[in-house]
Length: 251
Image 1 (cartoon, one colour):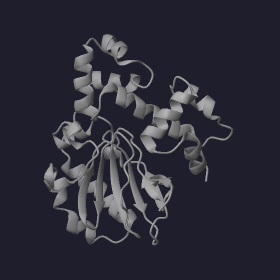
Image 2 (tube, rainbow, N blue to C red; image 1 turned 135 degrees about the horizontal axis):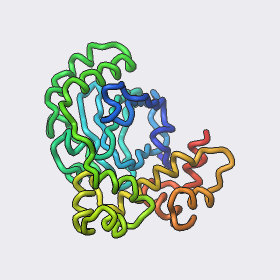
Image 3 (cartoon, one colour; image 1 turned 120 degrees about the vertical axis):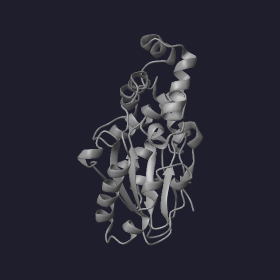
Image 4 (cartoon, rainbow, N blue to C red; image 1 turned 90 degrees about the vertical axis):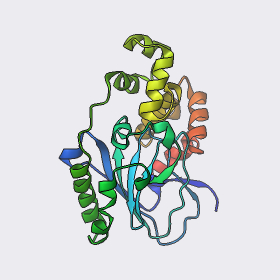
């Protein structure tokens, strides 16, 4: 096995807007079907600051936030359904600080939402991945309970971290840098600097496939100090260079 391919460019990966009842809680619903043949390259799931609820025919799992790319082993022909939680939501839904889930994929039954876990057989009995994904959202909406809004200081941190240093954000929202770090780790799983790196990466991924987009221009537009800074961070976070990512995203 040689090389690395972005998970979203492997097999059939699709994202869907969430059901109206879930729009404040999940960023998207998605499904990913792996090809029938084993992959010729390792599959990279790059960090995005989110937690995903996953369902396969083996059951429910939770994928915690990642600091760097994860390289899951996908079975040929396997279909995975997912709900990508909005940043800052998972802590309240799962009732645990997210640093406990960094880089982990764990059975949902180990941490909560047991009402959802009991619906596994119902999902198995439903035919077709799209129908299962709709049912998964309906079950989740029924059982999630009341989810509070993201606390204002955490929302400000998320909005500003890609462009401003932690000490500036802390001063703007009226907390110490130590308190800011505690907020960031509890709500998002990482400290402010790691969160900033991941958000810059996601901003890059949103734009990298655009026609006529230069890497130097991307570095300037997405909050990196320069192209060398972008190259270092992207390689460390994904194991791919910005150029390799651009080529894959343009296919």
